[in-house]
Amino acid sequence: MHPSLLSELAAARVEELRREAARERVALALRRPSPVARAARRSLHGFGYLLVGAGLRLATAGERQGHAGRSAG
Image 1 (spheres, helix red, strand yellow):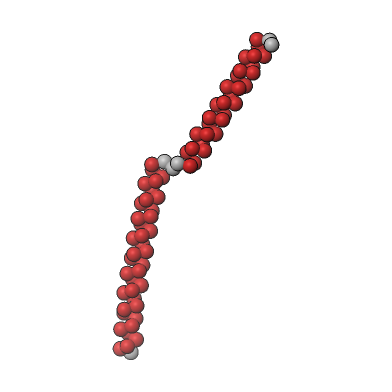
Image 2: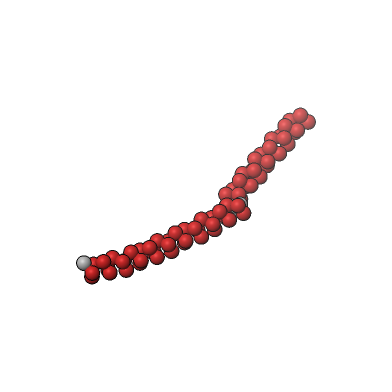
């Protein structure tokens, strides 16, 4: 084979390998969230539990007040 053809084939193969490696890096990043994303998710979960707990407390307090109001009226 001609030397320039060999160098073109080698360059094409190197480029193909670079693209494949870049795809794998992107796929890995999509499968494993960053530490910041994990911390944000934990924070949001904690905030969600806080809101649910507060809602349950308000609902039960409202029920208690509602029952007291109905029996008095």
